[in-house]
Length: 178
Ligand code: SF4
Image (cartoon, rainbow, N blue to C red; front, side):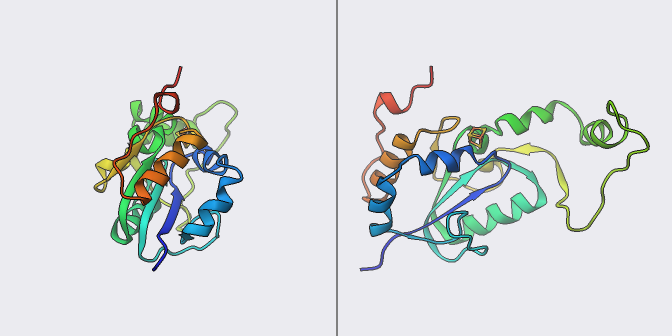
């Protein structure tokens, strides 16, 4: 029997959701006995292949984020918005109240302490989008796991239930955030 394959990516996120994934601690050993990892910072594989589950941290802030997200959507049977930034843009989306022109000017031209600045235009730098988009506004998303970040326990419960084909039910203790 083939083992489920999991991929993960951080788009416009802080890697906190990936850190939380590692908080499943020693259960990682159990996980790797039952699944294979594809593209993820854990394996350092750069290109995604066919997968069963794709976990996406962060929203889309630039063109590269969109490209990665579309590749995940194409390759993953189930796509998961992992954490607040993927679900609603989170902290990076605070820039949405300003225009892109205002943001670039404040960051590179007119901001405090800047003198004769210039807006970087190296082709290696992904172009910023006009605002930060939650991932479900860019591709279809199958599951949403809220939290900033979702706890390691919530991620563990979620993966166990998803991979076993059960309806996903998180206990209240894993989905309250006060
Ligand atoms: Fe970081 Fe929170 Fe966003 Fe996850 S949801 S990427 S922990 S800010």
